[in-house]
Image (tube, rainbow, N blue to C red):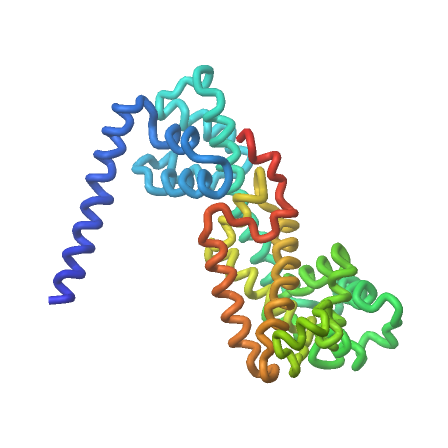
Length: 326
């Protein structure tokens, strides 16, 4: 009986999506004199709310032109919008704002798709110790994190001081490839003070910015540390999966007035490192074996935040003024 009811509900939903929804859109156009794209652009504020509705409308359209518009080359967006306006019989002179709004949305949609490709390319590129560029990046990571401590040799136990597992960090990049190194270096270089502080706290968590009263209130007597670099690679994996799953669309569509870039992704990684560090201290795990539990709890919290269409994980990176008049 339950199986039959489930099938009946699925059939009803299919019928609604396939026929009734199209009929409703037709009626709405007749009543308002505007197509669905116009209604979204005129009635929804710029940012994730508008762009995600536009993306859904284009993908679900029966028109091949609209379906493929979400995957065109960035240089073809302007021509694509002209074709859409012609298809929908919309006069651009009477509706100039529509073209501007659609262009902003398509730049974000296409940009997100291209960002996934850029991030995936870095993830698939393995660290090569024979590549001078790779080696230079790795040595810079040490320099940014330990500016007052010279690295005695390329193969050294000193790497454990910044959270690698052994004498040669190259083996730790296997999971995330160059993406892990790119993110760690970005954090260490662009946010040097914070990165060095997080590194220090990870080694000596009781010396973190929490006051003695806060420690006592939270009963953080154990204060288990963690391996900074390894956690950074793990948080890279988290950021990567949030990106590929589409969960980060809310964040990027709210902070990037046009196409989200690799820098936006790396800034998001920095934010996640900051937040995970605070979350780890607050969770006060019994030992490092609780890492997976804490990470999963942290992941769920971030996903819940991203379900809010107005959410920007790190709003200080947002070009909010650029979103106002799109």
